[in-house]
Image 1 (cartoon, rainbow, N blue to C red):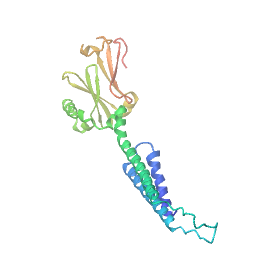
Image 2 (image 1 turned 90 degrees about the vertical axis):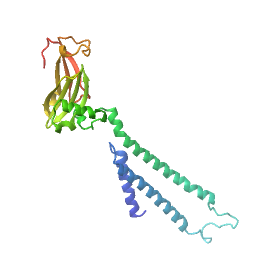
Image 3 (image 1 turned 45 degrees about the vertical axis):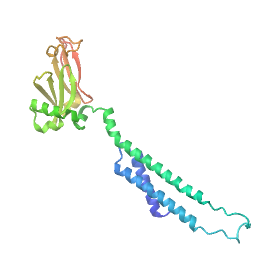
Image 4 (image 1 turned 120 degrees about the vertical axis):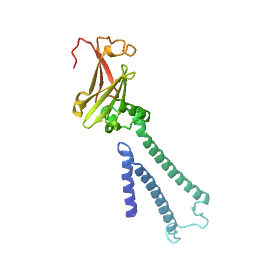
Length: 248
């Protein structure tokens, strides 16, 4: 094997480590390069085998065991030679198909992972705004009189106890927007990034201000509902405390 072939084999092993041995998604160009290199190495192997077969010296009648004139030469039949090439081509086609399917699975892995694992906490700002929320985001921004600069970071974090909640980044602060259903005013509260990582954002809502239609059954009018969105929250979460209990 020449030095160029050895270099190609080393490069192939390096590409295989990237595609199959590295956590995460390998770049598509690396997968394509590996497929092309596997093809080239198989073609080189076929060429070397053909040259080796055609260039081997014919056996001498003066050396080795005596050869009987009636003994037939072990020459492969044409049909047998024709059958070998498709077998190798079939193997390459199978390997190529496997690599293409693997590349397709990798390409689909990121969207599937996003669907199976919703963003938590600040991760919500790393995901693009869903198309279904785009129109509503503009409405919320205008109604809450937000600075246009924060609009790209505006994200919905759900509903709770008859309120709609959105979050956004404002410089080094994280903010929570809350609006009671049926066109009430938006209310905003912000904390620093360090404060958010330590205790999250909390919205305190007296239960008496919650509509009878949306107030959960265990909550009485004298209670207080705490709606929270923290560093590990996939959406807003709430719990109630008795009105006689001290508030944090």
